[in-house]
Image (cartoon, rainbow, N blue to C red):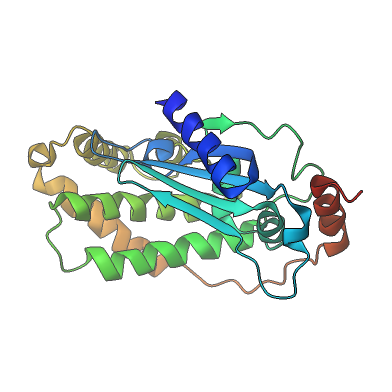
Length: 251
C-alpha cells in the first residue's frame, strides 16, 4: 500500500508542479482504531517549484486535495504550514507526530521553533469533542457503526485534553492515550472493548454496560472542563519568514 501512496504522491508532484517535503498517514489508521473499510488519509506538505507562483497580488491556492474513496490526500503549501505552526495549530501537530511516515522531513521544516502551546491544544480538543458529541452522537443509535466511529473520535479528544490538564502532551496512538490517562481500569477496559469491536466490525458483541459506562464518562467529563483564559507568548514571525525564504530558495 505504501508503494501505491508514494506513486500517487509522485503523480501529484508532476500534475501540480510541486515538491512533496513531508507526507504521513493521519486519521483512524494513524490513531490505531481503523477497520477494514477505513480509507487512507494521507497528509502532506509541499512547496511550489515555480517561485513566481508565490509572488502574486491575489491569493494563491495553498491546498491540494485528491480523494478517490480509498485514498484521501490533503496537502498544505509550506507557507501555509509554517503559518499554522506559528499559530500552534493542533491539526499540524498531529501531522508532525504521526507514526506512519511516507516521506520524511529531510530539510527540517520546523527545526528550532518553539513547541506547540498546550493551552491551545487543550481548548481545541475539548471544543472538538464537545461539538462532535452534541452534533453526531447524542440522541442517535449508539451502536450504529458511523456513530461508534464518532464516539471513538470524541473519546480520543477527551483523553487528549485530560492528559494536557495533567501536563502531558498527547500522542497519536489511541492505546497510549487510554493507558496514560487517569481513569479507572474498568473504564479503560470498556474503551478498549469498544475500540477493538469497531476495528473487527463486531459492535453487536459489545454489552450495553460498555456503552452506558463510556457515554456517562463522556458527559461527566464535559461537565468537569473549566475554561482557563491564557495569553500565549508571541513568536517571532520573522523567524518563520526566514525559514520560508530558505525553503523556496530565496536565501
